[in-house]
Image (cartoon, rainbow, N blue to C red; front, side):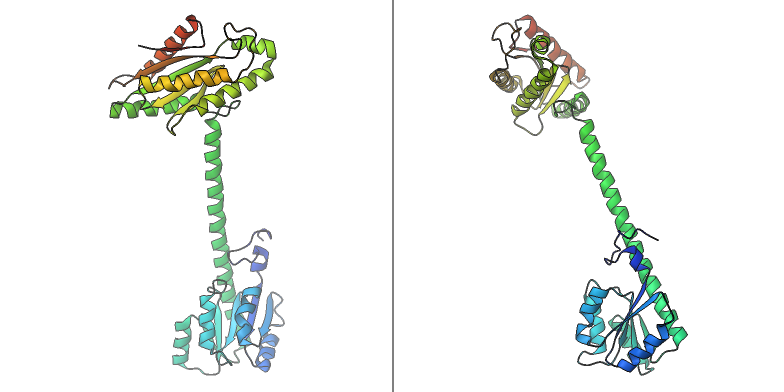
Length: 338
């Protein structure tokens, strides 16, 4: 038996979907009692009766029968019209309908199937035949609901799995401390942008940034303060980027890297100066630092129009050498690679 908490496609829980639920629609009470008597010894068959044809549709929506027995001749609604109404209602459009008629008439049968009925019986039908047809149509209907629900559940599971994979990919591309892109994401992005710049013969810039005297800051304030410093620097570097294609990533330790596609040296210097100024504007005291006495950064800038046979590693190496030059020159400055 399936989980009772799972609803089938019709909104009926799986456990209820196994129950055969018969709804008789007709205005003749003696017919209803006769049919009820035929089914009374079948413990797995529920029998419900609605006399008012105008209330039949609402009753069927609420009851969710597995099969509808419906009289062909009723007042004030024509039996064929009521079948059409069942088929027009989403909640009952697939519910099996067995029409009960007083005539064995091929034309009436053809019309019944034409408007959407599933079966046609002359009343009063034989008890065994009635039960067999009720079970046949109810089982087919229930199986269809369970099949549809299984497909729905599978689609939902696949979607949840896909969403989870997307989230995992996002997490795998983020630095756990600062929340910006990690080294792996940087490597992937740089490779992609290098190839694009090669094809289009456009400039690509890398800014390699290092927090000056960071060990001294950690020693003076402690590692929690050092972690907070890294987060704040990461935030201001990210804020300095203007385009969706630009990327800020943690390169490692207290080093960060910015990738600026389609950016020449002049444009990259504007971004670099903003980064320099915004970090200093944080006004994080660093007693061990020379110069301003606050946390600052040094930046190595490298710009290239990639050659056809060159590798993106050369751009990182150029930025690294420029960063070393900035450190040697006194820190808190930008050095561009030639």
